[in-house]
Picture 1 (cartoon, rainbow, N blue to C red):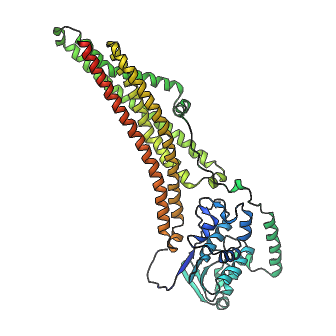
Picture 2 (cartoon, rainbow, N blue to C red; picture 1 turned 90 degrees about the vertical axis):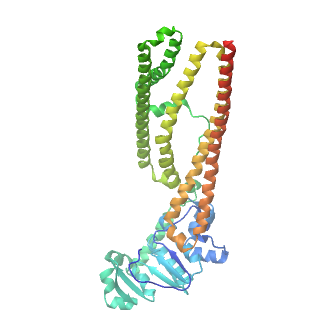
Picture 3 (cartoon, rainbow, N blue to C red; picture 1 turned 180 degrees about the horizontal axis):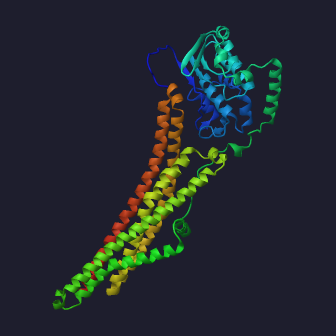
Length: 482
């Protein structure tokens, strides 16, 4: 609510219970205490007054049951009562209760109003918003609001006599809440019967929030193949592979042509045809390289679109249980960071891998064909490179998966904090949630630094091997020339 004009001053402490109940990830007791010290007698009285005793008895671990993000394992009425118990547990001077009884049935609402609002808070100042007329009878003062304006102010009897209530309160609520005693008794019997028919939530599987799985082992070749198959046909994949080989041949062709020219007589070097052929080969390699990159990025874009569409369709068709057992941060992580890697990082890495593999093959094949002695250096260096690469890929893959899992709690905590920002601020718990965010962020940063460090480790070892290879090639060239 934004300020339009005027000011307001208050004395003493106050606590706020929002209309939309907010429950964060943690145990039920942690949600109720919300950083306050635990006093068992007071805690027990509040649980009884808020009609949570039977609910806690139905849970497998009582008030130590861990609820998921946004209280996924709780019903709407249970979340409302937990939110109310959190507010009542604080010893404040003023209690702002924003329609806390709208999410509970008549029987539970009457129990909470009598035992909690009139009972435990009987000596406190309470500001209660409600659309239920029977709660106004016990109020010291009633303010009628309609469309942002004050329609009436006074005691319940005064407003009843002025017929303001009849003009404001929805007739549907009046008929439902101001029935005769016989209707009230019938309603009590129906509600008790419905409560007995409610399924108990004692099954642990119903209350369990699934732990984010982390894949183990290498990425199969079939997974890469399925990635490309999701965007284009198999024949087009084979055709693109052939085009990549042709492009690499065009890149090597200028060097081969220069080596061919070195074998000719000096008088033949002045022929302009040789320069024209070399320029044509360079231009062809440049154009084919651009076309290869363009086609490859188009393929990756199509694959990413198809996979993203499949994810969206699967999410839209997912049952409600999926959203109850998977936090929002985990879903956001899949559609933000993971899809971002698939759209941006994966195509570049794939293209770089293709280019470097083909360049490595050409760098090994062409010199070895001209000087077979280089094989005695290339084979050991290649074996050592493959050994370090295999070791690096095995460790970095697991570190990357761990980093992805550690990122989900960060998103979940941000989403959860924003949902309950009004409660956090009114209770003065900003520092606690900031420290909790720092804890999640530190855990993610640790895993991210390990990923970066593993890449640097591999880079240093590659630099050493490349230096060894270059030095060996120069040494062999000098020895052969002598």
